[in-house]
Image (cartoon, rainbow, N blue to C red; front, side, top):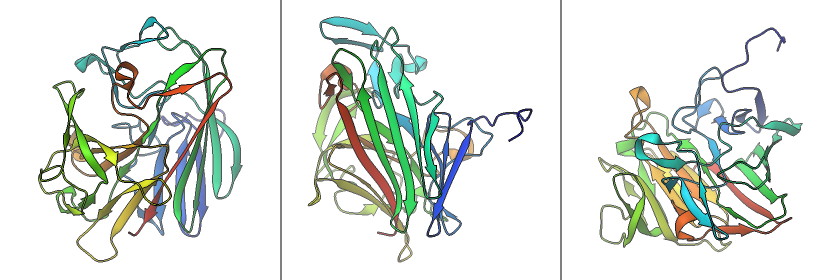
Length: 309
């Protein structure tokens, strides 16, 4: 790019490809803008010169989802985060999804990007984040590392926010399987107020079934684990062989599923966001599944998308 050219709204673009799979990673947020196989888009992404809509493909750290009033207590001290969801008076989606990430290393089929999160009033601890994105015959893979480079213990949670799309299949016709035995019940601010067993309810997706007109913006817990300790969510279409599997390793014990009903314009209910999370919403306040990183500790977690089921 000529230095006089305007910078794309999503920043520098890093493209990787192998075995018919292609992905585009962006500077803004270090997130996933596009993923396709043999020219077929599996991700409901966005254009190069477009501000990321609906947190599509973003990395969410050092917390996923929402924190009530942006207020939490850690180490005996109360902290106030900026209210990044002001209409609901919440702090949402962490601190790195709009930050500038830098290139660490690149090969044709993989790219590693990083961001150094500096201390700030609401989160006064430094973290070093690195993500290795890769593609190959087995699909897309993301390998995340987050290191506490400070001198104090820190609270931490992690998620990613990809929107999955089956070409030509409406959300209503997608058959969804989520291995969560419980779901969080939420208030009008999308904050948890309790939990319920999903068995026998409209939220029971432990066996694959059509979404229909169900509205989902739901965190599923008590996840059934695979033999390797991880878990996966599947989306399948009416036609045989049409489907996607999003998997995550044992670091992720929650799945958030969002059918996009609150998005505006053509994005409304066009795809399904499926987010592996290490902890539920408001974990900085509840402490539930909150990760505590000691000085020098590194958290590592992996997830990916496989076309076909």
